[in-house]
Image (cartoon, rainbow, N blue to C red; front, side):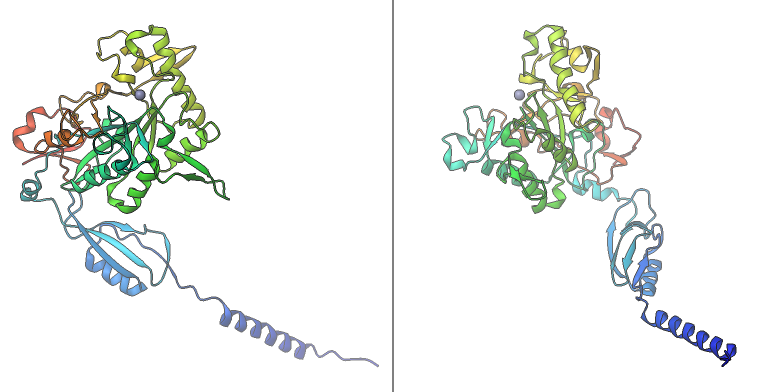
Length: 414
Ligand SMILES: [Zn+2]
């Protein structure tokens, strides 16, 4: 028997099946609720409002003075353009309030030629201030070591007095980014003490577990407590780095990946007036070499001078701290820190010398002997107060004569 295949029917059937599959695919495809964000920078608030309404975004509007963006237009957006977000996600825009009127400068006493404190810390000891017999949380007679509790109080004092942290390297480069009316402060730690970054162990992912009462533990606490404090610090190490051989490399990497900096405090902490020129090159070169091997390109070319030696820039060893070659390895230092007693100058000031910066010893001596309280009282009326814009240098007209380096920024006097 012959079976007659009715090709017409078969095709109709197949066609029907294909259509059915397409319909199922169409009906059950996952609905795309996302939006690719447009670039709204430079648009007006009204334009962004109608855009947000159209695509179903929640809009947050912030306002800020701007020297470069016309009043009423968007300075920046978060998330950035081309970001894929959910339809009901929030879009935050910053609208320009235009240039800051000079009354605001007066009101805020803006002075970007003012003094900037660079604090010098050493150890942070896991103790309560009541557990030492020395003044206000000093752990030793000279106050080189502070209790964790006193260190917390120091940070609270800086924050409440309008100080916001900046990186030492940004300071020497004249790159200061602090909000309007606030003042920059720099934190430094010498000697690479174990209590600067005490590792308790590692978790199941191999991440470092940091003692909450070591220097970095306390700093991280304040980073979370006051996000606008911009917590950072520069740690100056010797050959022992942080004295934890098994973790040293991981600690260095952690620091540079979390907004901190590492600099050079020489291998053996010598008094530079008591060693040969050759030895001076060796002790500087070897720390740079070590940092080059562990965190290449990620450390700062800055030396914290041991004991503040050689005390004078005219000393013959000073030049090899700044630049030298040891056994074929060459280095160049951009800044050097002394052991000082008062705040240093603005990087825009004619008195500014990054190769010989003064630091304030961070200790307590009842407001005497250039302790924290005294050093801050001394600059009460002469501290650096920011205009909130890193592209402009704002100074009272009468101070204009001490302006030297502008780093390509626009000068505004009032
Ligand atoms: Zn030291």
